[in-house]
Image (tube, rainbow, N blue to C red; front, side):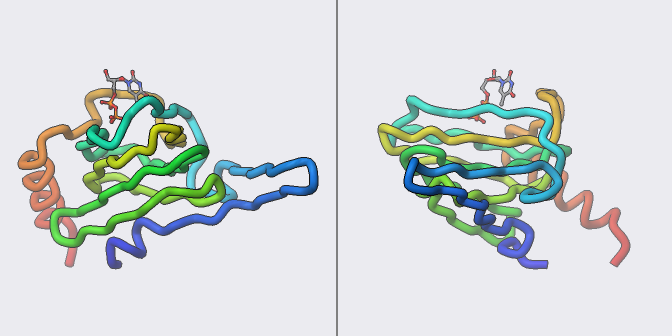
Length: 143
Ligand code: TYD
């Protein structure tokens, strides 16, 4: 499966009416996991690169609920760039892909939905270690 297929863009239901917009995200329905954790990143600017890690266990969905940012996702072979610039658009990030978030607009609020509670030990923050783990996993998996 290509990296694009593994990291789909998800369009959420927008139940807006004349009173304004309402976007709904339901765990195991509009996204492929139950939501255990929610955090959001704001106050970053165009000079900052966040993320710079892969997760061994966690799945994420990223949504810019205000402003915009970009996400670079790679598995060490393919790379995709996603611009998050609408509150009803998210990107799904499975375990064991490397991600960088960057180019934050001043008003950016990047909402992150996660499938796990926080565990710093499941983060891989060194890119060379990440590549080594990917290769080890590939060797271990049946062809
Ligand atoms: P970090 O993972 O570096 O943020 P990002 O990848 O989004 O740039 O997290 C920054 C700090 O916050 C770090 O000390 C770990 C802590 N943290 C938690 O305690 N719980 C969480 O759910 C997250 C995402 C981070």
